[in-house]
Picture 1: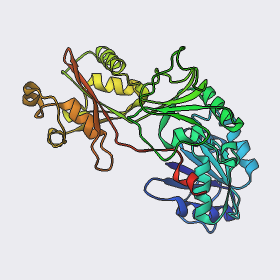
Picture 2 (picture 1 turned 30 degrees about the vertical axis):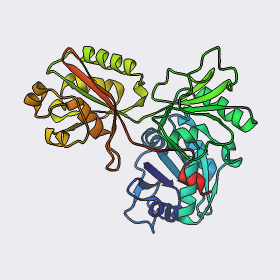
Picture 3 (picture 1 turned 90 degrees about the vertical axis):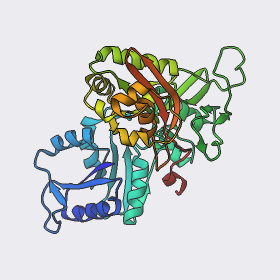
Picture 4 (picture 1 turned 60 degrees about the horizontal axis):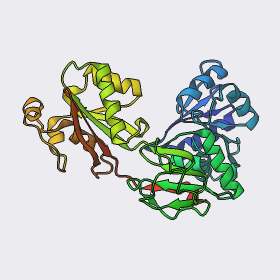
Length: 373
């Protein structure tokens, strides 16, 4: 998580450094900035070398979160011209100079400002101020759930409807694909449906709530009449191809492969292949068009991947491993030494191959921070 902490006075710089030391860990990269060099601050504080509004415009686009040390009014005036959408805006937290309050100001759930305010408060001995309704009522917050579980939200308008229904005590359904296990008990605000429940149809589903959430790898299969789709980015697309294959043909093949497999492009978290294909134009074209990272592995790495895979003597003779796409997908989906689960075996067409593996992950109803409030 990339965080900028901006302060405006000498006292603010001292508090900002306390925040930096409290939050700085392997998962958080935090820099402290000030408009003018503090007499007591050290080399850990960067001086803003441009107009503060220009600085804010840059960091609003690139940072995951911005912490202001100072008055709420300063923060509001600086961020106001930059605010676009709760799906893209960074988390904004404001801490007073004395370090007494940590206020979640913007993107409370989706960009985790609420959690960041709590972390900051816990780290410096302050009190977190969180004003989102779901938190005040300790209710299920679909945007926080989506953020916690790295899900793509299908419709922010429907997400608002779900939040309104939850807070208003109106029925909201929930269905999760059996491939996506959720730890804990279904929140009392939701009516959760078990694995094996059939997708929504106009007949036979009259007893279901009209509004509901479907957590699935396929955003196109609703389980409720008014269906909010949550798609976890938890699938690795393993690929291979002959040298010089046409990029657009490769793209069509991969989209058709995903369509037949019933997996939405939103579920793909990365593309994986053998290292000999690291610079293959068709593969790079697809990754760039879909803004997906490409990870490649040596033949010796792939051959050690445990599991049963389809084999090809021709492929083994050519690249040194019997199956590149399946093995690369499984290796790419490894999490904490647990191998990925091959969910779609290799499909081949005209010199192109693809397979899918699922990251082994346990999902959670609420974040650890939320649970310990």
